[in-house]
Image (cartoon, rainbow, N blue to C red; front, side, top):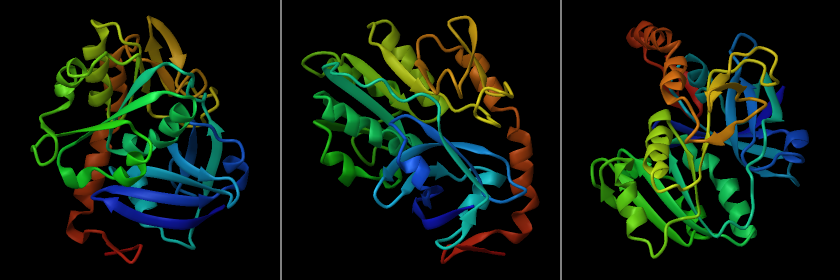
Length: 285
């Protein structure tokens, strides 16, 4: 059992969760993840570590509330405990002095990229951040990134901040730079990662994505998180979670990600008559 230090909604449907996990905090590296289970009956959810404090022995996760299990996590509060928090899992992000690195983040990926950006800056890179969201109120942690990034671009679908549109604006951003980035790292929803990879393929910009398939044990035993990379089967938990975006079979990946979409929709439909309401960190019905 891991005690919750803080749980709060930072933007609509996006939650920050800080857990007491000293063993993980002492070993975790940028790009790695943990598996969390809200309660004894809950499913195991892989979530990237967005920050940690080795002295306090805490790890921080940013997650999106999209279904039954993340909904259960969102109902917890400081002082509660989660049934499971294991890690660090997966391989750490490759960090080197690449030159200029463009980091593209959307939804939970904005949080997941934070330790990566810190490590890239420490290694001497120039970092360009691109935030993508439906609207300006869904972009968070800007104050943290301002201290690290050399330049920040915002892309919102409603045009409320920065460029109007989707990540399809990326070529315009890249073409407006004095020189193209030496590497792109992208984290967020499947569409964001796939489209970014598609747009960096022809220019030949190395592009790293962080895959988040359905996962159970996180140690390569179950095979649920298998993905096809450059025509070969890999396990996201032990071979990843980061891969070249130009080598991912995105059609297959998206199909597998949708495996339980109907069940998640049915969960919310069943709960419509008694909507759960977050009140002071607890769920009321």
